[in-house]
Amino acid sequence: MPLHDLTALEQGDAVRRGEVSPVELVEHYAARADRVGAFVTTSHDRAREHARRLVEAGPPADAGPLWGVPTGIKDLHPTAGVRTTFGSAAYDDFVPEESDALVQSVEDAGMPSLGKTSTPEFGSPCYTEPDVAPPSVTPWDTARTAGGSSGGAAAAVAAGLLPVAPGSDGGGSIRIPASCCGLVGLKPTRGRVSGAPRYGDPVGLSTAGTLARTVHDAAALLDVIAGRRVGDPSWAPAPSAPFLAACDREPGRLRVARFVEPVIADVAVDATSVAAWDAASRLLEGLGHEVEDVPVPIPRDAVADFETCWAVLTALSAAPPGREDRLRPLTRWLSARGHAVSGPGFGLAIARLRQHAAAALAALAPYDVVLTPTLARPPAPVGELRDDADPARDFAAQKAFTPWTSAWNVTGMPAVSLPLHWTDDGLPVGVMLAARPAEEELLLSLSAQVEAAAPWHDRRPPGW
Image (cartoon, rainbow, N blue to C red; front, side):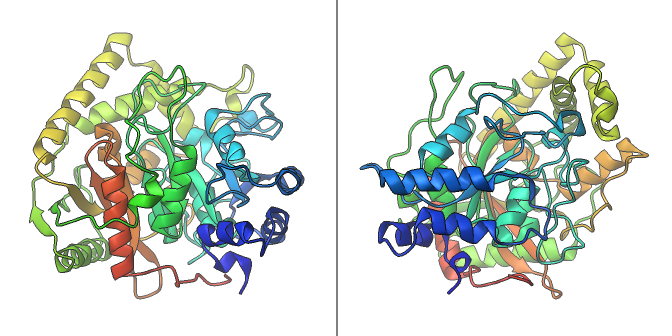
């Protein structure tokens, strides 16, 4: 059996038993061809050296189950000594001197990084078509997008170029590519993963999370990256046990709220997305859970406040002086919108988002989880959403593609996209579950139960 057929946890177990070494795993993945636009920068020699150090030192007493298993780092995370472009031609030669907390956590866990996984400029669009690398595509149909902004990470895991990978999510950027690539995509609760040392999101929309082929692998990587750092402005309470352990607990009988109406107005929802959502509802009922229709918990006027905050956050991602002309038209358009917002206007938008979040959390409090589609349609063809000539149309197309995911960034709830449905022509269609804040353990327990009832791990894309 090829090594990439094994789950990440199975690879870690093989390392512990001495059946394979971290060096062999690095060499196996380094030799695999990137036909999906997964990486913008590779660091194979650095990964080999890291793996050799692991072999020489041996596993520490507290080694986790992913010790010795390779991964990659999204190109938004500064990595010391490795080119980090933030998906932008304005940073095409930037090499950081220091790594951020996520990179340090991954390295400290004994996971060699094979390189920087591709992301769109500053992680803003929901497709991954940076000017510094080829588009990231889903291996299920390489003419279609892998989604974004963690598109490179998702493409790498789905194509068997990495066993598991971290991503980040400010409006759906883990769950969107998970749906496009047939993966588990987990966005943790607000404060679960430290944003040190930059703390670049003053709104609180974004968090790092995990992309994997199984729920157990996603949970194991969350154990690696989660945790509080000194200086964090806020943090989630520690779990009762490792997140991986939650996958082997029975969730009990749960109350499931569901809605399919988009949060964003005037969005057409493809029949496959509705079918996936409805089939997931029946599956949950068959597992003994109570599923109930509820009204959309976030009003549509919250969208304008989200857009204000998104534009300001984009404006904060400035190009180096003299390189502004290298920014994409969409980035310049969003930045101009952000610069036009006054300080009080930004503060009021944040306040209104928090009020909307509080109202949604109160409305959903009687329910253990919430079920919606992940996306309004299957993966879009490469270039269909992007429109450099008309950034406003580009932005509108993105909203129509993903009209649910950002709701859980506003509330801070943990959310996961699960690959439960496939179109007749073999494209993955995800469904999304969200839980109360800080209840990743329950979300993982339920997700693992769903995976056991409707397994997807044996599905392989063309060219696997």
